[in-house]
Image (cartoon, rainbow, N blue to C red; front, top):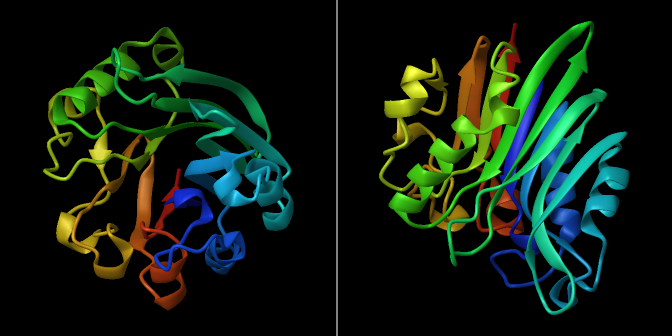
Length: 234
C-alpha cells in the first residue's frame, strides 16, 4: 500500500507558472493508492478558476475523494484533498485554526482495505512552533480522533516543522513512530534546493517498509515542495 503526500502549491511551480499537469505527472509516476494533497485550489483566479479537487480525482483516476476547504478567498479558496482507491467508510474534517491565525485543518478518514480498516490523518499545520504544538494537542484530544484510536493509523502531511520538535512528546506517548527520520534524508522544501524536512509521516500499528522524497527534475519544477512517498504493510 503506497501513500503519497504533496503540497502542490496550487499547481504553481518554481517558474511561477500555473501548470497543474506537471503535478499530475509527478503523482502518476509514483502509482500511489492514497494521495494526500495540501494547498489545493478551487475556483481561484490564479489557477484559472479550475475545480482542482475534481480535476485531480478525474485525471489521476481515483474513485473516492474528500476535500477540505481551509482558506476562503474573495473568490474560491484552497485546502486539503484526500484521494483514495479504497472506499471511505467514515470521515471527519477538523479545524486546526488557532485564534486569528491562518485557517488550517485535518482530514480523518477510515479506509476499507481488503476487509481491514486503516485510519488516515491528513493535516497541514501552521507556521509557528507554538501553533503547531497546540494543533497537535487539539487533534489528538478530539473525539473523532479518539474514536478511531484502536485502528492502525498513519498521520501525514505538511508539518511546517523546521526544527523537528513534533517528534516524541505527546506523539511518542500515544505510540506513534516517526517514519521520516533522520531529517537529512527527507528534505522536501524548498523543492529547488531542499533544506527543510517539512513533509512528515507518523505511524501506529503499521510497518513502514520504505519511505523517500521524490527529488527529480519535474518534481523540483512542479511545486515548491517535493512529494513524500510512503510504503506501508500491516
